[in-house]
Image (cartoon, rainbow over all chains, first blue to last red; front, side, top):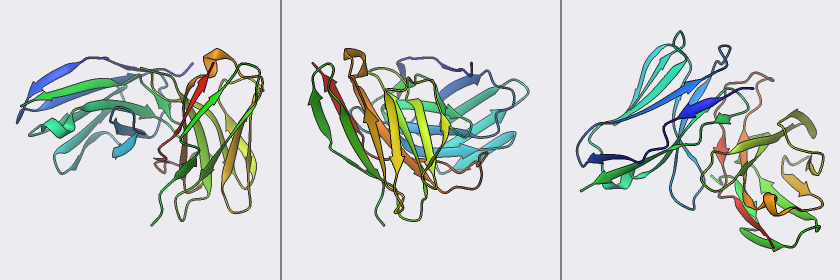
Length: 107
Length: 116
C-alpha cells in the first residue's frame, strides 16, 4: 500500500514569512513528486515538480527532495494572504496524494 | 489554449442510479486519469486511459468504469450509486510517454456529485 503522509495543519504564518510544508512517502521506488495547491471548492493546481534529490526553485517556491529519507518539502518565501490554501503532496506516475496541509497566511 | 474541461459541474442523484461524467483533455494531451476526492481528503486514483484502453486502475470496485474516445476525451461511469460515492470527481490529463512517464498531470475543475 503506497502511502503519502502530510500534517493536516492548519499551518499559520504571518505575511512575509517562510512557510514550510512537509511530506513523507512509503514507496521507496517512487521517481516523481509534485506539489499541488487547492483553493476551497476548486481543483488542484500544479505548482512544483521535482524528480531528483536536492532543491528545485520557481519564483517564491522551492521544492526539496531527499529520497534516502523519503521526504519531500515545499518552502514558500514571502508568504502572501493569497497563498492561503490546501497544499497537496503527490507521488509517482498515477498520483498518490497526501490528505493535504491547510496553510493560512495572516496579514 | 483550452485546459481540461469537465461536465457537468454539479450533479444530484439518488442511491441505485447510474451516472456518466465527461472530460476533455488539455490541448496536446492524450492521456486521461480520473480521481475521486472526498471532503477533507486528497484525491484518490480511479483509473487511467490511453489509446482508448484502461492502462492502470486504483482500488475501486467494478461499479466504476470508463471509456476513452478517439479524440482523447473520456467518460467515467458509476453504476448502483451509494451514498459514499458523494465526492468531487476530478479528471486530469497528461502526455503519454510510457507507463512510467513522469509528466505532470493537469486537472479540470471537477464534477461535484451528491447522492441522496
